Length: 273
Image 1 (cartoon, helix red, strand yellow):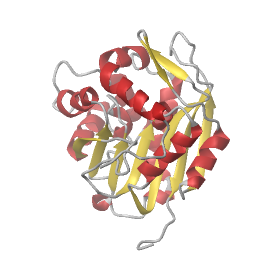
Image 2: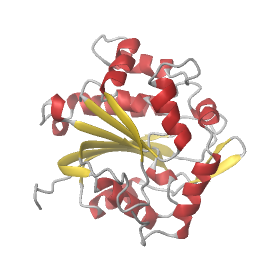
Image 3: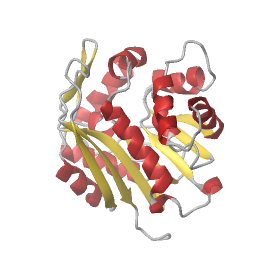
Image 4: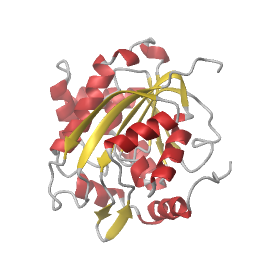
């Protein structure tokens, strides 16, 4: 394993900030204490993609491997894929977030963060399954929480698995501060995608920073055109993109984003190429 040489020094600085300062419980209190319309947008788009997008229906469910890259302390986005696959892997850089997902929530410990409203919303989008059923299904298909680092040439090293679907939410734009670094990191993540695989990416538009308590975390400000160019630069084709103007106040979310996005992109590389 070695650090990539194409990143600016800011990538290492941001990574160390998350490793040393990020507090999952305070993050949950700040951004997930209630279910807002922007999170509903993400959940709804993920649910629609895993249910209706023809790109995601080619393989039988038992052979579909899903990776969520940069899951943070949040299990609920991966739950959208719970009935799509028999195998979901979560990747996360910070040990505290890995512990929260792997041990406290997956093992139903009483100290785990409360995601009930989010599972209830997912249930309202589906075919009659209850929130508890969706949560239990996620626990059934969940495989492992593994360390991931988009600054490495092999982001999951020593694991070299390729995935049919990679999903990433509010991650890459917050791990980088320049568009060049964002494109480079996206390329590292996409290297984990099999030929014919699909990338689902959701995040913030026009954001430069957000706060958790007194700690300010930086971000690269991206627009729709930047995302399209970044995806094309790493060899993928955008098949759909949806955006939503900001619907939350700065008091509700201490961040300066102008909106949010959700995109679907396909790796059209042929096997063996």
